[in-house]
Length: 150
Image (cartoon, rainbow, N blue to C red; front, side, top):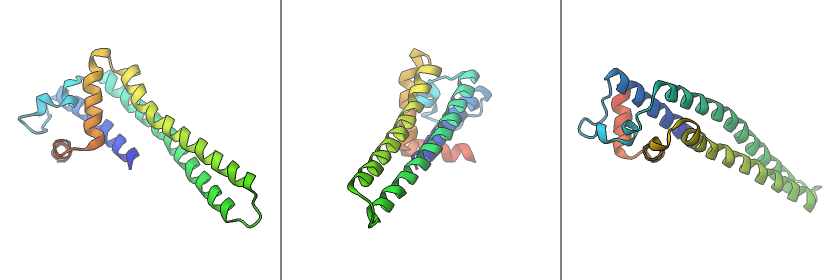
């Protein structure tokens, strides 16, 4: 679910910036100019860089998620086995913890990469607020996405 929200957030973030350049942006008319995603004022190069970062991060995250699922299956299999030892169970648990740590690191890397590799220092505050709006999907953003997709 978080992966979907992240992709939607970045897609909306980038689409907002592209729409502004074309004069087509139609969020909530009275608050559009004040929305943090508008105030970030991304360039086309930044939009392209964000899309690239999201794509690469999604590829890595997909593999990390598969590794977590595989490790969970291994834990279940080990614990249910009548021939496994305590050491086998500890090893399986350790592998699961490592897989989960890798997934967490990949998820965190998305925000770090966008904030420090793409956004300028003066864009970070609004970029962080935009990301916060996107991750939480408050009504104004949900309405904006609905309006934008029509």
